[in-house]
Amino acid sequence: MRRFSAFAIAREATRYHSGWERHWRAPTPKKKYDVIIVGAGGHGLATAWHLGKHCGITNVAVIEKGWLGGGNTGRNTTIIRSNYLQDPSAAIYEKSRSLYETMSQDLNYNVMFSPRGVIMLAQTHHEVRGYQRTAHANALQGVTTEWINPARVKELCPIMNIEGPRYPVLGGLWQARGGTARHDAVAWGYARACSDMGMDIIQQCEVKGVRTQDGKVVGVETTKGAIDCDKLGMVVAGHASTLAEMAGFRLPMESVALQALVSEPIKPCMDIVVMANTVHGYLSQSDKGEMVIGGGTDGFNNYTQRGSFHHVEETVRALNETFPILSRLKMLRQWGGIVDVTGDRSPILSKTPVEGVFVNCGWGTGGFKAIPGSGFAMAELMAKGASPLTDEFSMYRFREGKFIDESVAAGVAH
Ligand SMILES: Cc1cc2nc3c(=O)[nH]c(=O)nc-3n(C[C@H](O)[C@H](O)[C@H](O)COP(=O)(O)OP(=O)(O)OC[C@H]3O[C@@H](n4cnc5c(N)ncnc54)[C@H](O)[C@@H]3O)c2cc1C
Image 1 (spheres, rainbow, N blue to C red):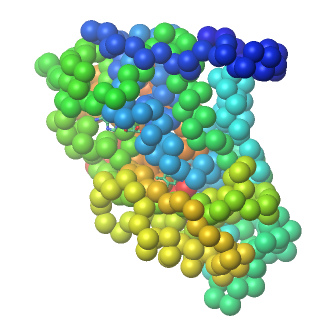
Image 2: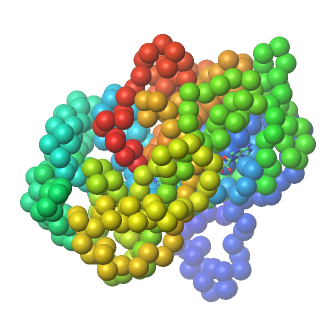
Image 3: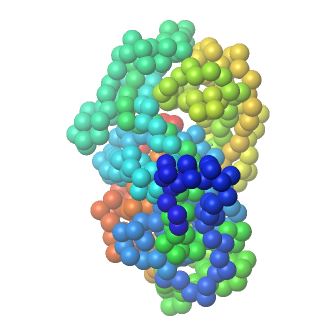
């Protein structure tokens, strides 16, 4: 695949950009692969890329029922941070955040990583205590975060009203190297690099069944026929329990819609990301000028991949007090994605009761930031049978009572 560079762009500019190749091939499935990954979201594609790049396994197919990146990866609000409370979480999220720093160079694809800084606002005394505790935990984990006072919050985000009558801003947890990246570009960059390594990305191909023999996986049934494999990675977010059922086991996970919306574009007015967990909303400004706004999950399990009006109203109403500027904006679009939520709000990267089947799910409302780290760890787990980054995230931790509780530290875990 031809590399992107300033020279290549200049050359193409002189010939109407007619020399660019397709980013990835559209192959017919082979009869057999060493590894099949189900789900061409960020986590599935990153797993495939790390399998090729660091484990030397390139006879890989990534099978996607829709279009690549069309699940949660292309629907999220792109917040990247690693200020989690528990050590195993900090380890994998910080690995991931650090991989985002070099992702554009590693993939030779501009993912527009923007480490503009993320504040998690404290608007109650409980949050002050909680975030100060997280700042201390982060210091011990080697994750750079800082507890900041209201004046500093106002300095970083002048459009904020820090003296709201119900929820004044009491401070915040600031991660200066947190930020955002372009979600589609992350999926496209990995897909292009995987295809370039000879891997097959098979879109419009739904996995309908998992074939096993003597407790070991031997392949999958798909809408494009049966495909054999030695190892199978299930990386399908909100559909993980459906896939697990096909393989004959259950996952401790619930699927629920999470919604987001964007406003009409306005001039640049905010150059950081703000999360306001008490009033329940979070906000950043896209390069086009739209305010990108995220809300909460639906209060009931469902697979409806779309937005609903009451969420728009709830979220905007919640944010209005802290961001009065929003009250004059028109909202342009809303949408939803099916997120995969576990009881302790931490992911599952695990072997399963079926030999050769591995599962990566449970990233819930906050897995975009984890894509490169999760791919790195999952590839290691699939290739070598273990990874220090996944040890604590086994699906069996719920049976053993070894929870990694992030529900308090990440009340809105985006
Ligand atoms: C509105 C919203 C806002 C969010 N905001 C943030 C945020 O700001 N920061 C953050 O870190 N995270 C955020 N998230 C969460 C984040 O988007 C997800 O955790 C992450 O994208 C999950 O990636 P994935 O690759 O596991 O799943 P997906 O991107 O959902 O990919 C899974 C793929 O599997 C495919 N699939 C499913 N079943 C089958 C089958 N049977 N056969 C073949 N293919 C199948 C699907 O079509 C899908 O493309 C948000 C999510 C939503 C919905």
